[in-house]
Image (cartoon, rainbow, N blue to C red):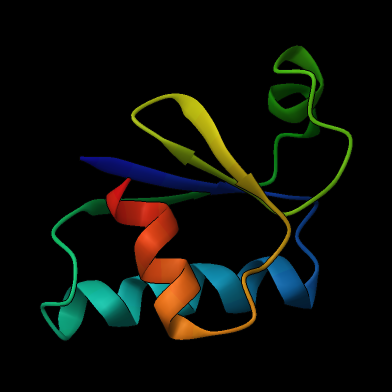
Length: 77
């Protein structure tokens, strides 16, 4: 699966990207992780907030899940 974090490049977006990469490194999820600061990608998908988590090209979550359990659940759904 391809997980893509999209946001304006703020610290919250970068932190979410790093959290997801860490989950992959720890073997808690299996994915290719990407990061984008292309705001047009958010707009074209109707997303009004950031960061946004895309899974295989579809928006799965907007915002930053506060705990690891919620993040893993979002990524595995």
